[in-house]
Image (cartoon, rainbow, N blue to C red; front, side, top):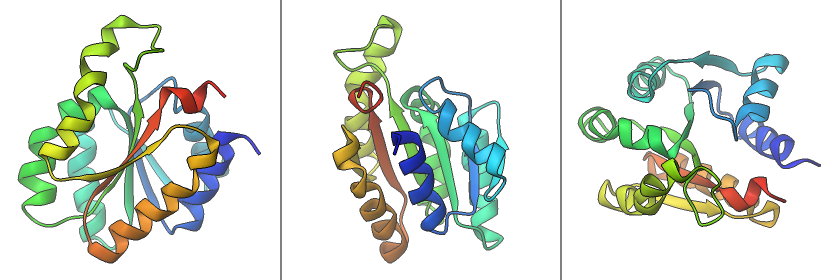
Length: 164
């Protein structure tokens, strides 16, 4: 089974019922599945911090939201995450394509790639690294952790995952 399909299946089986995203080359197949299958409500947005606000509203309305974004979008969303999600204790699952690792062909992503994990640590967001298809089961672990602790989590989908 392709990596994208495995990730989609975990998302669907986990009960996530509200997906927000900004376009991302690495996440495009997952986003296409979400949009095509029409089993999970899907809302594309233009800015990541806008998605954070919408995810908060969805949660307060009884939904289980997730945001799919690049790690550059994580940087764009810091204030919204801290002053909205964390302040009001609203859990959101962040699926983050981790651009800027050593194998990254686009050098513009490297500076953000170097600080992504540090940013998550500094925001006290527990995260899991998904390096390959053998790590995919960690996604369920992360979602379960979020559900049990009612806290946001990060799932870093590493460049190496997409290179398999």
